[in-house]
Length: 407
Image 1 (cartoon, helix red, strand yellow):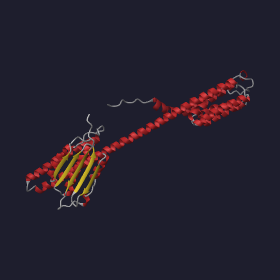
Image 2 (cartoon, helix red, strand yellow; image 1 turned 180 degrees about the vertical axis):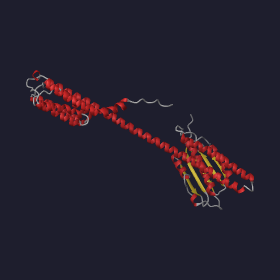
Image 3 (spheres, one colour; image 1 turned 90 degrees about the horizontal axis):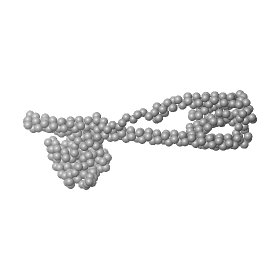
Image 4 (cartoon, helix red, strand yellow; image 1 turned 90 degrees about the vertical axis):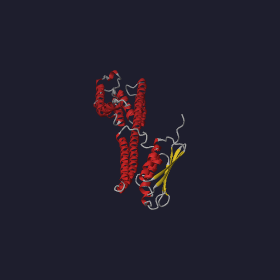
């Protein structure tokens, strides 16, 4: 079943992008509006009705008010500098006995912006400093700052800081969750890529095993057919029939494994192409090629884990193929021992006294026994091989595969 398509999130996508793009212009507009409104409040308010000690607006108070309001344009990009400039403008207006007006409200916006967008210690320091400044101004007896005004100002400053700090904490939590999600997504992509590589390597090993075994049989039978073509037509025909059958079998298996590469949704745990039940056919193929195989099975044969089943078969197939290619022996023995939690395999040949095993074949080469050793290790088992003498060779493997518990 396919997962339903996820609709685009305006909160996390379009809206976030628009907010980032428009925020510089929005803050600039806020600064211009705040500065203009503060100056207008200073010029249009009848200060005598508020406190007779207040002086009428002059160029200095107008400039200080305008600069303080305009400083909000930096409230998110440089929150600390914006707050300091704002407070300096407010102090200049207040200490010269001019009407602070709208700046007292905008101070809450400046403190909120510092708490929300600046460092936490800067926000705390700004809150404490603002409260102390208001207390000091009240003690100095500046106009328009009564005890009730002081209490309200402190309460509002605390509320503005708390709101900004909460917004800042929430933003940090969201950023942390986003980083975790990105890390998990990156890990999932890496695991998926590793799984694809691992599956491709597994199929490559399977292709090697199939092709190497089949081509060895074909090469032997082609030699036999060519040798007896004029002296024994029936034997030549049998050799060519074996070549045809082996070719078709190899082609079928190759197509099946290549299909896994093309199939995106292929089940990686699908049953193996060959199982231990096919050992009889393998022994027959080898006998036809000129190597008589003695197969001995001890214990009670049982279904193995699919990976173990396929690896066990490939160990025997590769070992017998090496006998055919390198040993010159006309017989080999295969021993399979089933136990309750594993299967043990041994493939042995005594070689040929008239055809010593080449030195290059005494050990693993290419993708053969080296690949099988790696497959056994990945399954938690072992694979060992050694020369018996100058001609013989033995391969032994131990593959764990616990029997399923009875239901």
